[in-house]
Amino acid sequence: MVMSQRTLIMIHGFRGTHHGLALIAKELSSTHTIVPDLPGFGEGDMLHHYDLDSYVEWLHGFILSHKLKKTPDLLGHSFGSIVCAAYAVKYPKTIRKLILVNPIGAPALEGPRGILSKLAVVYYWIGKHLPARLGRAWLSSWASVMLMSSVMAKTNSKRLRKFIHRQHLTHFSSFDSPKSVYDGFVTSISNSVRDAAKDISTKTLLIAGDKDDITPLEKQQELCTLFPDARLEVIKNVGHLTHYETPKEVAELVQAFIKSE
Image (cartoon, rainbow, N blue to C red; front, top):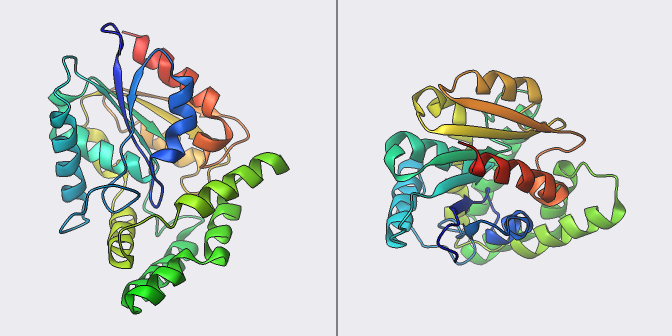
């Protein structure tokens, strides 16, 4: 790491792992990036509880453990945006700037995807209550992962869609247990960046896709107005998977924001 480099800690979304942010990190060649797995996913730590406070305290410990000489910047994608926003409220002095990519800016049980979110609650509840082996098989089934992947991908490129599906099939089933997935999902739909926005004093960049139907663009624009100091950048012709479909564009926006005063 070059001493003049900024450090950016990047937090991935629900059911993802650090692999999901690898394409953005690759483009940020002039920034020192640290991309951990969230607790309960990939090789992440295990927690007693997977509520928002527990994720925030884990992140605080993670940042302190690196003993960085310069205050880092913090980026969260999707569910990671909820964790990072809550973190910025509680520990504002430990980060310099905040970047929220495809932030969850509205309650998941409301809006155009409300019905799907309610069905997903049932899906994860069943996984939690099945015997452990069956529960893991239920949550990891090809059909369920492909359904989620197909709904979120907006690109018309067959090659890129194939890559996205392969990423999800490879990494979406890398979790600690059906219970940790269920608890994490309940946390993801019970909170939003909107809950924290007005109390975030950190300079913030929001990056949204204009086809994101998890948090539609009008809700992202509304969310931006709630922050004391934030701006919104919109990437055209992409939805919730900007980290896969437009990583270069995301990285350019992130890099410019990090370098700005």
